[in-house]
Length: 235
Ligand code: GLP
Image (cartoon, rainbow, N blue to C red; front, side, top):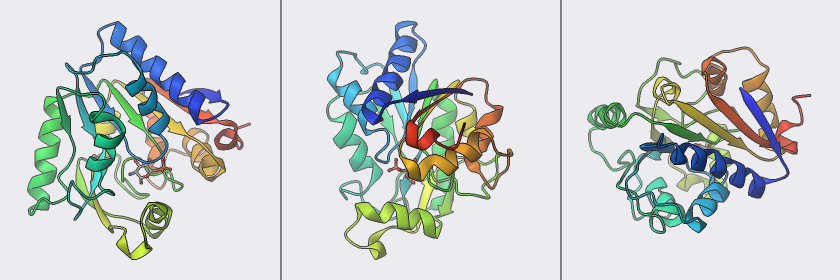
């Protein structure tokens, strides 16, 4: 794992953007794996402000809340359109469908999409409990797309974006850790003191399903971009 420490999320967004740009210049990016949450916002700002053309590229997102319409401003579909896709059109943007009536069929459909669109670079944020996508502690490293029950700590953390905690969906569709690990390159971003323990456990801790992001220790091409606060327990 390569660790890059940056001053703040602005610089982190620039560093991540440069890594993507470099691979795009080599013709290496057909499919970009994307993430939601506040962490990748500065990367998406760099992408939208750039003169890069994404219209021949596909994107595959990590996850979506179950039960939210695309038009709901808390859905990840809405988030991606607002922060990136409306400003930078892609060839095709794939996300799980939070309103799918058959959850099993939806997970299968999404796995087929991932298989048909091998991810060249996967962007990741990280939860305070080291979840990636919505793969909560205890998720299998061999897991494919599944419908997951969110933990209390994730619901609590994500409630800051909702009017009240009761509005936070308790379930989500998430790409599995196995699919994340199949991405050719992974860029994980983490900022702020609340991510310090998760980053420590991911980088220096034991590789265990209790720490979903620790699976990345086995990936050959991972860059972790952290600010000083998120990196504070590493040295
Ligand atoms: C959600 C998303 C994750 C994201 C995490 C952290 O749970 N499913 O992909 O990494 O939130 O969010 P933030 O970047 O806002 O801290």
